[in-house]
Length: 468
Ligand SMILES: [Zn+2]
Image (cartoon, rainbow, N blue to C red; front, top):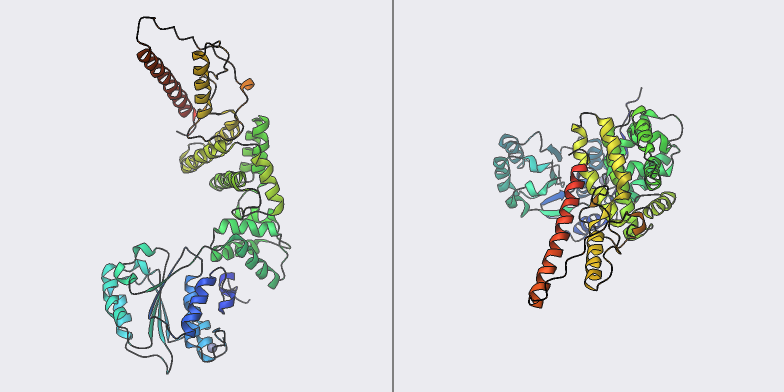
């Protein structure tokens, strides 16, 4: 049986043209070769799976290629190219900084630096996770880095450039690789699927891209996992099943049920999640992403590139966005992010999840604090102008929760939904006191009342927050 080669290796770019999402860096590297201004040390920085070592290897391959194309692409046919592709080139030495981090390991490098590469070629050291080297190892490397022998190059890669010593940084040409856009990941996975003659739903690839969070290697590993499981075409359902995540439907269901006040659905949804053995942490992560997407659509419209979704899902997000106020989305997000950290420690994850979904649904009942303050200020105006004190409707402190830090340009809750409460009229001041002092005192006491009212509301709602 032939050994299975993981997708990330099988489809590793062997030409600059196949590198995804790093166009400016590719252009710069080619220009360096074009103008023969190749520095002797490079640092490739970027989050995992963005192609740091892939680019380093490609660059090394191009520098040593015997038949470089006019467009500076390695030929992949010459002896040097073939050796590098197969991973046994004697001129390209790859070192994992994480497992060779001591001074002894670096000494081995600096001792071999003097031995030149095969005739005409460069000797290139690729050190991955270079930030893991010890300080002593860095210092041992420094001298070689300062004055490397001719035809020696150092390519470093790191996910954490801030941990690399400034003395090293200042001797390197630095490239910051960007996270790969979801659309580009989807397109690459689609190419792989076509190449392997596998039919796969576009939605399914989007879900993988969302989970990979900008890393092509992560996306390919997830796809590997799905391929190992599936038989026949790959659907959204397959992916959700294999990776233990929820399809988006269930989140849209929460939106509808919450608006309709159908709280029983919270229990049904959790039952569904549990009976399918889904990972709860993934579920809460998914819910956070859902509200993030709703907020993004609310702020930037459904066609925003900030949203990784199909046309159908964009329509659905737009419909859901109409069900929430902006401040409400922000409040729910705050709440979910806090709950996310705590769900692992909850004694009963089932009840914790029920509570979380109920709280999200009940966010429709929350009244923003600036709405309350506006009402109070209006009431004050009416009192001053002699209007009846009972005219302005006010929510009673007991059954409402107040959104903290809210911003409301959205429809505020209809006053008719809120039970009215009588506020006692302020006693007219005795006529003998000077007018400005009286006015000041009156204002002071009103603001005190507003502040006190707000404090009671906030205190009450904080106590009611679950998982605290
Ligand atoms: Zn070649």
